[in-house]
Image (tube, rainbow, N blue to C red; front, side, top):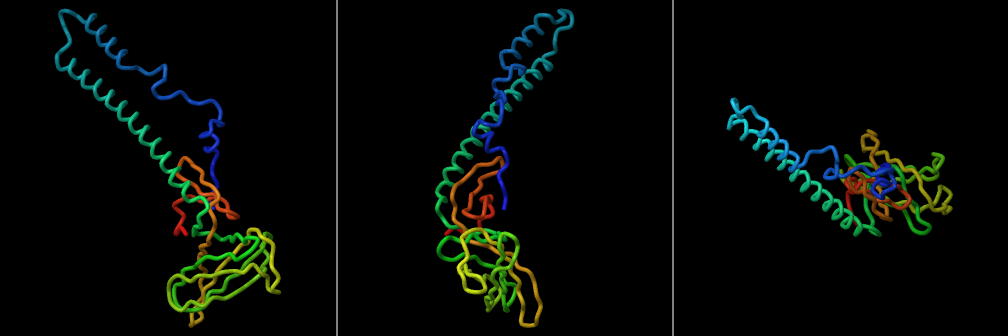
Length: 223
């Protein structure tokens, strides 16, 4: 899983003194300053060797280019801000929904089961091992894979003795064994409930109940 960096605090105005906006920089030259400099240049040019028309037009062209870049930067900044707001609003619709994402942990609720899927490379058996917070195994179960592809699994929250374990976060691993005895380790994809949505500098993050924080692009399926 991925955790959010301190940029969240900056977005809330808690990251220290704010930097001056691009349009507020006192050291930057604006349109009026450029025209004033050009006027002074024309006033103080050598009457016997005046500025060539091509040089004058070149300066005007440079000024137009700089002005265009400034306008483009302002437009892009506005577009980026609008996209971030829209992304947050779209992400808010996922709060309370169930998502499927890659994880080596399971969030066991107070009641019910924890579930997910694996991708079997071939027919065979998939053995799952559930471990507690200390990494000690608490339950092992096997699910048949009738063909290559997605194999769902579910853990009822009980240990090897059939006793219900307390709610919390547990580790899970999966091992696939083919009919010929070849073994391989599989990635596990678990289901979790979205509690909230956060915005980082590199995109949207989902806070998954019992699993932590994951980027939106890690979500494989929304329930």
